[in-house]
Length: 295
Image: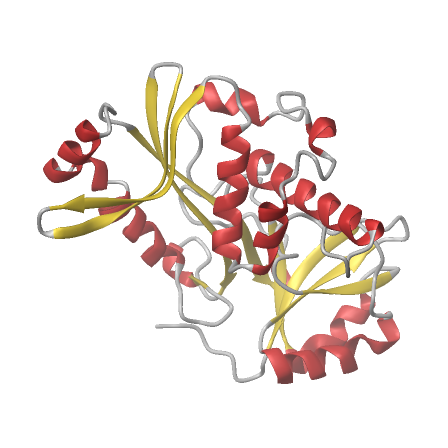
C-alpha cells in the first residue's frame, strides 16, 4: 500500500473498482452480446462479489488501471472478471498476431473455457445523438471525432474477422488453440438530446434497455436546474462507467457556474444528478456552444 494512501482511500477505490467490475460484466450492453454459456455468468449471483471486496482480491494493478485511458481500464476489468470464472485456461489479453509480414492485428481477449475457444473484441463508448437517432451515423463521440457506425464497421469488417485470416490460424495453431468463436462486447451510454432524452428511437442492434443519458449545450445548461436532484456530481474519467454512489460535489445553485468553468477548461463535461440517498438519478453531457459532430 502506498504510504500516502489511507485505509479509507483504499476502501473507496475498491468500492469503485468493484462497482465498475459489476458494470463491465453484468450491466446492459450497447451493442453485441456474450455467447449463451457466458450470459448466465453475468447475473449478480454468478460471481461472488462480496469475496472480491477487499485489497486481498482486488489487485493493486487493477486499482492503478483507473488512471489509465478508459478503454484500457474497461478491458482490464473484463479480463479480470473472465479470469475469476472456473474452467478458464489459455487466457491471453491484447494478443498481437504475428505473421511473416509483420503484425496482423491484436485480439483483445482470447481464452479457452470448457473446450471452447473464445475471442472477444471489447469497447466502451459514449455517443451523443444528433438528427435521425435511428441511424448509427447520427451518434457521435463527445469530442466529435468518433461515430457509432464507424466503430461498428471497424468491429465487423476488421477486428472480428482477424481470427479467420490464414496467417492468424497458423499463429493460433502454434499456441495449440483451435479456431475461436468471435464475439463483440460494446458497453457504454447513448446520450439523447435533452428535450427528448427518454425517446425510444435507437439504431438497429442497440438494445432498448441500453444505458442512456442526455446532452445539452452550455448555453442552455440553466435548464438543468429544473430537474429534481439533491446535488450534482461532475464525473471525470474513469467515473464514467458505473452509476455514481456517494456524495455530490456541486450544489444546484452553483451548477451553471461550475459547468461554465469545466467546459471552458476541459471541453464536453459529464455530470450526474444525485438523489438524497446518494445514488445517481441520471447523467448527461454538457458541450460547448460551438460543439459540432463529425460529418
